[in-house]
Length: 153
Image 1 (tube, rainbow, N blue to C red):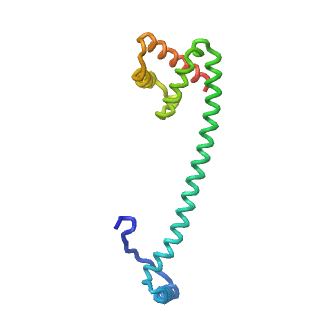
Image 2 (tube, rainbow, N blue to C red):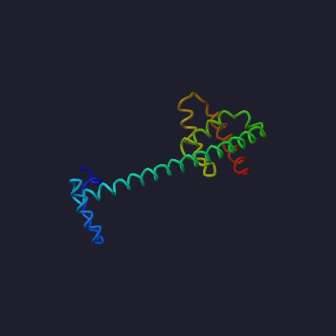
Image 3 (cartoon, rainbow, N blue to C red):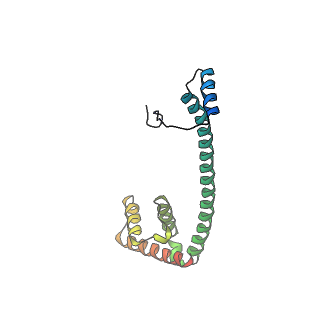
């Protein structure tokens, strides 16, 4: 038996008329008073749990909507920054890859550091044959992009 369903004894005080009714009604249902109370309480527990879970789903859906709105605003800002800088236009694909990587790795833009660039680029070059000079260019482009983005936040 799991610890959640294992019986646990508690003592409750009831007015005498309720105690009398509980004993009689439980007997009529071929149950013990504690079984009857457990059934009654379980009914209310399940109703509460369903309401709680519904609230959690609604909260999650609203935060998901907020996340989509934030993402759309961020995308617009990113596009504006890239289009406004000739150096970044050439590295748009790299910046988009980095942003996707940072989202997947739960890295917030305001927290981006050179360590994040390093980790991203290590993963990126592991899949490709890239020259050292290109790596330096990529790191410089990412740094420039993040500086511009932070100015606009």
